[in-house]
Length: 565
Image 1 (tube, rainbow, N blue to C red):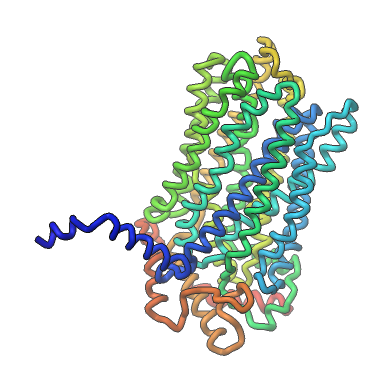
Image 2: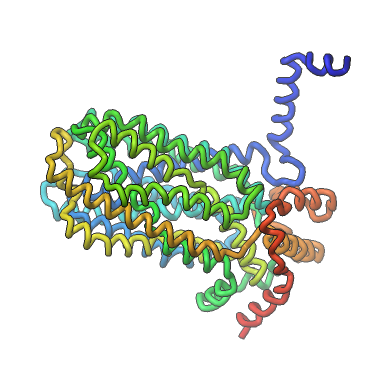
């Protein structure tokens, strides 16, 4: 009888209960967590705006497409991207140091994001305008003056987006969980663009630059509107510094000594450096599609929407897998597993060779499947979570998070290394004779000689990607920061923050001024226990880790003494 009555609950009543639950969670998070639905939604819209602008820029300012649209030698693309990465590497530590000492009504990080938007928009529109100068020198100068600044701004804003999950919640599992709906929203922008850009380019044919101008303007407007939603998200970072420590300016030499104590950071940085060319194939994927999916490049562009969408769907698969694997596996095991999966297609292509896959339907089917498999990798969704744990570890060891320096080591340094490796690879590109500017006429089929040259270069790119991916896998075997260790250091950080808060010398969280920074209080023992349960160790491999991070309790004082000396 009770069972029957339970089964006959009216749909209207179920819907009412659901909406009541959503209404409750709109302003109040789940017990033991920090983010309510309103903030998650705002961060999702901000992430979508970043995705629109970042992907829009990357439809022009890549190693393969700068020479294509600007009709200049490929070496200039390598140099433009390398110089932009170098500028970011030089600037980020200073920006990070400034962030450490910034306190505004909207937080520490958001002022820098909002301040970067005007320059980002201006240079994005200029870079995607692609003026049709007859003089090649004029086109080269314009490319350097627009593509380099927009890459600097795009990298900076994207790095800030990658860092924000570590800022808006200290709960490591919550960081991973929110990246699923966020990832779906982020994937919306490239999905739409992949569907429409090919047909738009094909429609303009000899005036492809017009397609890029339209796309650039649309992405800029949508991006700016969405980026402003970051103002609706609060910042929450454990405050373990006294007022005197906050006022200290960190010298570069001191920061280097602090970072040297962070073994997980060093190992992940080395892995990213050696694996910096693991996605090199993706730089030339649009050209592979244009050259190999049909004998007529304009037809290949017209039909490129569907295979590009299928390839892009791999990101959705990764997003759905992320919260599952993060509960069952270590970050190290997750990275190694998916790196093996994504490296395998490059290994196959380097062995088989593009020239042995016939142009047309065969290439369309085979390459779409291989590219789809290579893109099933949630690493870029996992990296912000890992960076947050590494920043927690840094704060535990030294009392400083050093976000700017960590961003530099995990994003900019590998990017600069990738460009150095890419410039070296240009030697082989030159030997092969592949220049993208020679393939800009999409009104005619490619000759046999042009196809052979292109395939030779695409094969080299696949080999470099496979080797780079394998090296990253080998280094990640030694990554030491497990769930168990992170849980222990997080408990220690909460204890330190609670002690400062109890003395009245500091707030528990560094966040938005005069705002309710968190819905978990150290004074509420029940909530803290629930918080610990959420991020409890569920990995068998973690249990084998006998190293207790609490043995490093004196590290903060040691580092502070170094700074005093």
